[in-house]
Each structure stands twice: as structure tokens, then as C-alpha cells.
Image 1 (cartoon, rainbow, N blue to C red):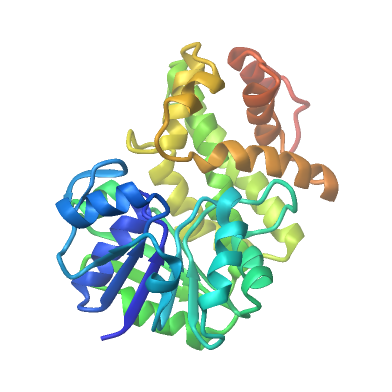
Image 2: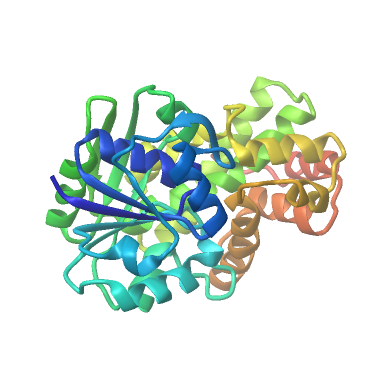
Length: 329
């Protein structure tokens, strides 16, 4: 039995708290909004982010970081990437320097172009942050369905510790040491999911969608390897695995956004009415900057960026992709 603190109570953070509690750990779940924290503590249900799922009574709910982090053996950051730096900076005041830290957010910080593990390391001064990623639609897991994921850390022993703490009969965890590859593939597949949603919203068919996603993974791998990732990581759980789930499921927030844009809705209206953050929107903006900085060719990502932020017509974006100069695969 270990003390596990989860920072962030969106759908994924809440689901991880349930998984950790099922493994008989002492679990604390930190929620930014005091009103929501009080309601969850009373009803044992996160009505905003995971309605209809009961939280075990053993999970301690708190809106105070100091209380939530007290005595933690493992701290899990489940905060949207664009808010992660501020939260990690605040949490740093209460973290034991020897604590095991795991990040489960998927994205790239727009201002600095840093990955989540880099942000946490900078703010907490703790090295060897582990990261978890994979085809993990939180609703399915919260409903008791099986899933698999991968934990990566430069320190193999830390990855194995996380693996042992969170692995269960219904949540199988693999490990590797390619932190860059796991984070980049997990982040950028959200951009691909927006593209897939656009394709489905336009009713372009399965052939077009399959071609789109294969080529999207090619450019994601291209960027990842430029940053130092291993190519094979992109064909594992955090790459192809996550892409299959996120780009085909009706539960995917990023896929929904693409589909709604294809049907003529504006990004502003979509975001205005959303409870949870769809990481693919900010990631598209960050990757647009990063690809230009590194001179990496990412045509699908660039078209998604143009549709989201330059009001480009989705059909025109598809047409421009199809008319690109022919070349070897």
C-alpha cells in the first residue's frame, strides 16, 4: 500500500484515482475548484467531468495542495498542459525531493514548446519525471472496461515502480525509457484526431481517413525523431495505439471538435460550451511553431492549424493535401 496523490480531477485524473483506490492504495485527489471538491466529497460523483461514476469512499478529496500532497509516495499530475506550469510551481513547495512523479497530461506548452515532463522538472527541480500514455479513453476505463498503457522514464527503476503501483487486471501497463517518444506521440495524436473528426464530419469515407492517419503518424514520427525519440515508439501504445482509439471513438473530445468544425461550427463556439480542455487545439498551435523552428515538414498538422486558427475551409484543406506533389512513400 502506498500514498498516491493525484493533482487534477478531470475525467482522466478522476479515473486514475479510482484505479489507484482499487489497488488498495491510500489516494488523495486534488481539485482546483473548492465548490466542485465539496460536491464530490459529499456525493462521491464527479458530475462535471465523469458523471454517473461513483468514487470509492476511500479516496480523500481536497482543494488544498498542501493537504493533498502531504506524505505522498507518488504524485500524478493530470492537469491540462497549458496550466501545468503554474500548478507544478505551486506544488513544488510541498513536494519531497525524493518523491516519485508521474505526468499523464498530453500536450506541448505554447509559449516554451516544452513537453509536460520538462515543465514539471523545471518547476519542481525533480529529475526523471515518468510519463503515462496510451489508448486510454477515461470513460471506458471508469466503466470497468480493460485497457493498456505505457509508462516511460529515463530511470528504468522509476518506470517499474509506477508500473507496479498502477498495473491491475483491467489496466495493463508496459514500460520503456523513451520519454520523448511517448510524450510527442501522445500529444500530437490529438491533432490527428481533429483531422480525423473533420474527415468523418465531411463523410470522406474510410479510405480517406485511413490514408490521413497513416500519413499523420509519419509526420508525428518525423518530428519526434528530430527531437531525439526512437522511431519504434510511435508504433506502440502511445503512438498507433492511442491514435486508433482517439481518432475513431465518439468519446474523443478532439475527434468531436473536428467533426463539429466540418459541420460548420466555429472553434470559438465549440470551446465556449466545453467543460473539459481538448488538448489538440493548443497542441496544434504549439506544433505549428515547433515544426517551423526545427524545419520539419508536417503538412497535415499545418492544415489542421489553418482550419482552427486561420478559418480555412476544411474541404479546401483536404483538397490542398491531395494536390501536394507526388513522392515516394
